[in-house]
Amino acid sequence: MSLNDQLSLIGQSISGIVPELFLTLFFLLFLVAELLFTRFGSQATMRRWLFILALSGAGIFLLLVLGQWNAPPAFRFEKLLFLDQKAVFFKLLIAVSWLFALMHIRLVRYHFPAELNSLLIAAVLGMSLLSMATHWLTIYLALELISLSSYLLVAISPYKKAAEGGLKYLLFGAISSAVMLYGISLIYGLTATLELTAPGLAEALAANSPLVLHVAMLMTLGGLLFKLSLAPFHVWTPDVYEAAPTPLVSFLSVAPKVAVLLALMRVVSAWPAELLQLLGGVALLSITLGNVSALWQQNARRLLAYSSIAQAGYLLVGLVAFNQLGFESATFYVAVYLLLNMSAFLLIDFILPRTETTLSDFEGLGRKHIFMSVILTVVLVALAGLPPTAGFMAKWLIFSALWEAYEIQGQPWMLWLLVGGILNAAIALVYYLRIPYLLFFKKQTVSAATTTYGIGAKVIAGLVLIAILGLFFKPEYLMQWISALSSM
Figure 1 (spheres, helix red, strand yellow):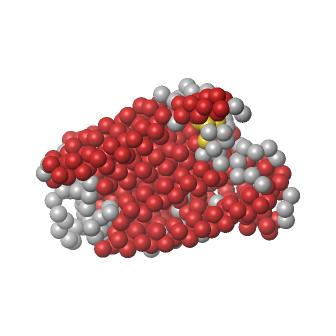
Figure 2 (cartoon, helix red, strand yellow):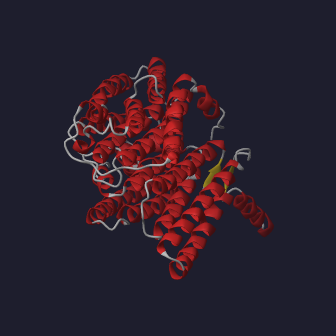
Figure 3 (cartoon, one colour):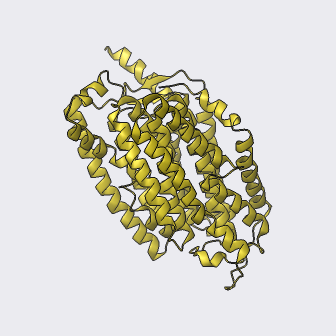
C-alpha cells in the first residue's frame, strides 16, 4: 500500500471516530478546567461549573454519535474497529447512561472530588471504543480503559468501605485481565489471528479438541464475563455495589454491560457453535446463583447486585438462541435493563438519600413518599418481569427467541435453559417484592432523615413510569429501531 493510500485510509478512519476523538480532547480539557476552577473559585462555584461542563460534554457526545447513524458500515484502522448502526445504537445507550448518572448526582446533591467527571469521561471513551471493537487487541485495550476508570470511580468516595471495595474490584479485575490475556494467546496460537472477522476463524478453532477449545474460549471471555458480572467472574459485584456511592454503582451496573454485550455478539457470530452451549451453562448458573443469593440480602444495593448477576444471565439467553430474534431481544433487554436498573438506584436514593440502604430502613416510608414509592414498586415489578411493564416484554422476547431456536435445533440444553430461566423468574418475585412490602405493609420503627426533592426529581420519576408502561403496550417503538440495525 502506497503512502497516499495509507494517509487516505487513516483520514477515513479518523472521520469514523469523531465522538471518541471529542471525548479524548474533552478529557484533557476537563483536567485543565479542574485545575483552574480549584485554584480560582470556591467549592460551590467549582462544582456548579464542572457539572455544567460535564453535562454539556455528554450532550455534545450524544449529538456526535447521532450524527453517525447514517454512516455506511465500514472498518476503521484496518480491522481494529467497525462502525455500523448497531455500534451507534449501543453508543447512544452509553451516552444516555452517562447523562442519567450526571442527573442522579445533581438531583441527590452528591459532592464528589473534581476528578469524578474526568474518570467518567475516560470510562465512556473505553465503552464507546469497545462497542466498535472487532479485534482482540482493541477489545482488551478498551476493557482495560473501562476497568482502570471503574476501579478509581469505586474508590473515589472518602469512606473507608469505598476504598475496600475499590481494592477488591482491582484485585479481581487484575486476575480476570491476566486470565483473558492468556486466553487470547491461546486463541492466537490456535488460529494465527486476533481478528474476529478473519475468514475461516470458526473452522480453525473447531479443528481442535473439545477440551482445548472450551478452555481457550472460557479464558478469553474472562474479561468480558467479568464486566457482565457473570459467574464464575461475579464475586466482586456485591462488595463493590455496597461500597461505592449510589450514582456510580448505578452507572457501572449498566453502562459497561451495554458495550460488552455488543462485543459478545460479535464474538458469538465469529466463533464455532460450541461456544453457545458454554455460554448457555454460564447463563443458567448466573441466573440461578444471582436469584438464590439475593433472597438472603439485607441491604438494598447488595440485593440489586445479585439481581444484576441474574439479569446478565438473561442477557446471554438472547445470544445463545443465535437467531435474529435472539440478537434483537438481547438488544431490547439491555435497553430496558438500563432504564430499570438506573431508575431503581435513583428512586432508592430519592427515598433514602446517601445512606447504607439497609432494607429495614424502608419500613413504613411508602406512606411518607407515596409518589416515589409507587414508581419504585413499578420498577421492581418490571425487573421481576411481571406485566404490564417493559420488563415482562423483555423476558418474553428472549424466551421466545430461545424457544424458536430449540424448535429448529432440538438441543436439549436449550430446553433446560428455558425451563430454568422461567423458574428463576418466579424466584425473583420473592426478593424484588420485599422492598414494596416494607414500604407499604410495615410500620416505621426508625426515624429516617427528612428527604426533600424538587420538581425535577418528580418529572424524571414520572417519565420513567411512562417509559416502563409504554414499552409494554407499544414495544414496537423501540423494536423498530433495533430491527433496522444493520448486521455486522
